[in-house]
Every structure is written in structure tokens, then in C-alpha cells.
Length: 117
Image 1: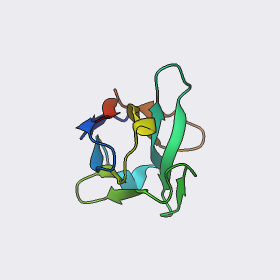
Image 2: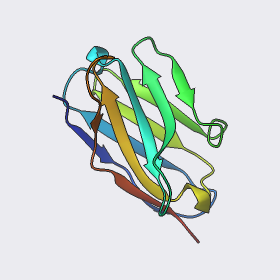
Image 3: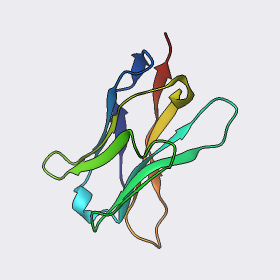
């Protein structure tokens, strides 16, 4: 069982930055993959960025030049640094974690990010 609690969302102006953090209830070193997804109104949930146990990252093309995913093993958090935000980034952002390839993944409750002037 893994509990995930997101924080750091809010309202920001276009061009601004936010840092999302996901607190994980177990050592992140025990997770096969962790990541962030987002879901905008009327759209499907989509991958933003993932980080696996080997330190490899996958980042969506739409954000790869602006955002960075990182893990902090001392704090057991997975963070998403979001720079140069645009209104198209407005969505609910969800943290995700999977222990192994044969177990189901876990989701956080989501945190709202709104980019608007």
C-alpha cells in the first residue's frame, strides 16, 4: 500500500513558476516508478513526467523544456518544478507510484493548478 499526498498547486500568472510536491508513505527507493499526470477539464488524464528506480526520466514533449521531475530520498517526495507556465497547463495534477510491474499503481487525490492573468 502506498499513500500519496500532493501539495503546491494554486493560481499563478502566465510565465510564472510552481513547484509541486508529492509526499510518499514509503521509501521512494522501493518504488519502480513515480510520476506526475494531469487532467484538464474535458480531457483525458495524460502523462507529464515519470522517474524510475534507475533514475531515468520521461517527460512529455509539451513540457520537457520547461519542467523537471526529481525525487528526494531523504524526504520521500517526488517533486515537479514547473517553469514558464501557460494557461494550457491549467489542470488537476496527480501523483502516481507503482511498486512493481505486477502490482497496481497508486494515485494521489490531485492538486489544482490554474494559470491565469
